[in-house]
Length: 313
Length: 313
Image (cartoon, rainbow over all chains, first blue to last red; front, side, top):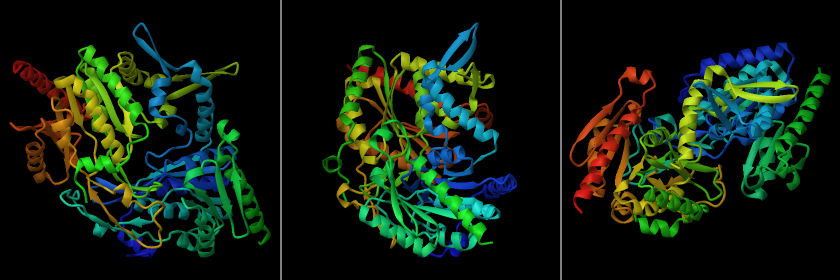
């Protein structure tokens, strides 16, 4: 069992596309530093823990990527540049509004003299146009960078590189760690090479993942505004656990949520206080999203955080 | 530990939408019996095994759903009616050619007097039209029914119901069991109610899933043509394991594939013989798909199977 982050990076191999992603991250950070933009790193989706080297089976954390992908859109709407670091096949900003199947159903095919033309049918035009406008604007402004991961190990490597790239932005950067990261993993040297045989039921021994917030806050990106998330199913554990984390890692904010009502209610927990943000049933019915409230609250806090840092110089 | 299928169905609750799906399955089977169509049940994608009742973590089997979704398209092209039983968010026939993100990138937005219109841009029109034509035809002919599952338990309940619905088709039905089904599960009564605490690394004890081919072939749908799949990473195990399965369950065919080259090569294994189907690198480069060969081979076998049954009456 290891809970030491340095040992983790020694023993687990980096993802094959790490250098390429570091290049993208560094360029993005440098560009928005020059433009004097605020930048948020949004992590999103679950991580997998492979049980075998030739991966057929893995342990997964449940996360569609809703919190992250929705929040990314609101950050963009509020002028932030967004690095969206997401689990492959989890929801992405803008495209999250549609599935590929749904797209096929929205398209009308016309053929004139054997020449096809395809349009979004009129009943869907307005709703698609609304999303498409924002998506094209984000791309045109160079405000959105998407990078992806699958395994827990990929995630931890990519997160460290992203922090290192963002340090140059100092207090202008927010880390919004919404990904559902596994607490457990199987070290590379303990994994089975082939598919585990199904002749007998195996017992899987999981190791604790190192608490990565510690080096992140203390070493990698000490000046940024760091927000972590806590998902619980047992309500009475939510605030005590969030407070423990804040004391231990000394980051800025925990956003707590219960699995059961996480789309309607969250608890914002800082060293100073804690309070609830929630949507009424009426707001939910109208399509409003709790992430609008979260991001709005956070932007206010970030503004104060930047002002405070400036006053100390 | 249980390996008894009857006990499994006693202890694991059915999915909440089972009755609804049974209704769809029965109607579909009755309609195509009347139309004298051949029907194939294609299962596709992986299954999950929840580790907790309030599911945050689960064990997953790797499967994008390529084999199943591609095969479904070829069965439709060959006149079969298709029940596509797939894991939520795995690939689906037709829409598999695109991601939602890709769709957004393909769309052009025009606004005239503030009125938007959206079209697929000309460079993509032909490729989208090709897929869209087939998709709309399948829907118009009532030839495609899609039903979905997520957990292993959902899958086993739905599979049994699908078999029961298809018995009326006798030899006209193929079961094409391409889903990557977990060999292990955690019985409902052994699952943790809340999220497993991360204070210590847990040890997870998995139970063997009952071998469902046994009741499927012997009891649920004894007259159908049944095809199972075997995925291995160790080449020398492939044919021996497939032969063992054929001897044990007495179904019609095993399609064997290696994880490493499963998009290029499969081995067709029956009681009589075994042979390889494969695509050349050139065919792969041109976008040809191994499922075209598999389905074509299978349709021939199914024809002979029906003729043989008829000759015995």
